[in-house]
Amino acid sequence: MRGYIADREGRFVREYEDLKRNPNFFHTLHEQVAIGLVTKDQEKLEAKTGITDMRKKLIKKAHGLVLETAVGHNLNIGYYDFSKITKLFGCDWVESALNEADKRI
Image 1 (cartoon, rainbow, N blue to C red):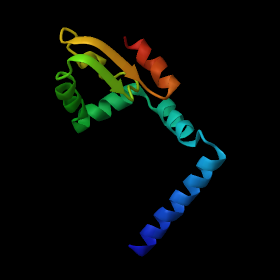
Image 2: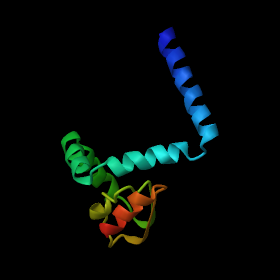
Image 3: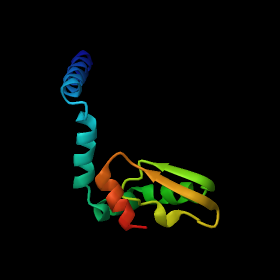
Image 4: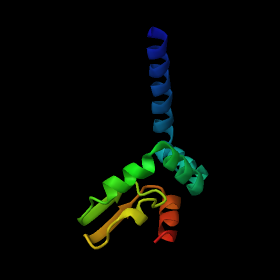
């Protein structure tokens, strides 16, 4: 256990140093992951693990003014009941994800 904690502390120190050198460190990392994520592969994995069913149950409860954060590739868009929604806003800090999300509208 002690070795695990020491390893985690070392990793946090390295990430903090990277962050000090490059304030966009985590954004860049997230962008790289988002770019590498193939939407069809994600959809298959989510269907297999039950995430798609959870998305459907949660999204159908949305009503009124809705803000979806970390919209990603906009996988939720097909599950909204737009008769219950007055406005839907989606945001993400990864520009390439927003570009992909726009394609699904």
